[in-house]
Image 1 (tube, rainbow, N blue to C red):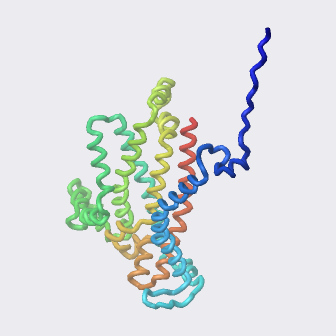
Image 2 (cartoon, one colour):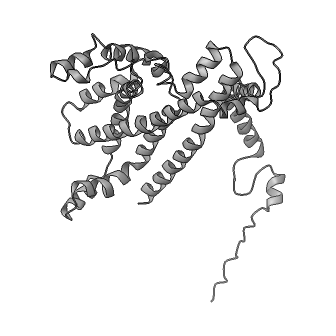
Image 3 (spheres, rainbow, N blue to C red):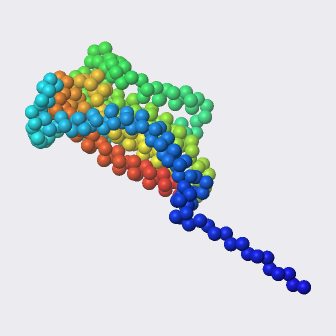
Length: 329
């Protein structure tokens, strides 16, 4: 006696039209349309405060600044006259602006390369140190968290021409010919302030890169050593590729700080002597708040922003690409 085959049950999936009629989207079974709308409303409610703050403190000031570029506002006139591109034309023909931009360029190069090189070198030196590593991190990172006003005042004492520690130290080792008023000499003032900034930022770079080095795959380093790779070869081909995303992030932060430098220069020299340390930030401040040329100072500030944003975007893309390559390695 042959058993008859069991009846076949064919399950018919609901069509997309039927799913929508029942309040469900295809591929998201169990989540009704009402629930999705509730989640969307909740999401809008949660981000609304952040969006409102961004509109009030970012978008509106930026738009207001763009308005000031095309008028001649002195801080008092409620109906400032329209000047069109007059502020931009004056900016392009202003020799003091170009001198400040040159100082900014020097600051960006030296103020970025210096901390990166010193911070990376210190991190590599202390990479394998376990005892006392917390002490070293605190000591090197402390200058970065100190108020810039306090740092500028203390270093002003160090650079003082008669009682400064730097000149006294040079005299103590017989280098009297090198003593000078470091902040009063137009030839050395900018680099003296830059030295202070490099000292401040090196600790930040050191701490971040040291943390990244702790995540380096030591097995790859040991394998490269067994293959006969020298120290510089291991650093270039094994260590740096693994910490490159972090290195690029630190580079971006340091570089953007070079565009927006203001406080340390303002405290130590105020842009002097003879505008030798004038940067775009201090020049914009002096025009806006000391000369009551609000529109021209705003134009200078927007120029700084326009220069910094593309660089920041470019470095962010490099950092993302390096992160993807590291995960795919």
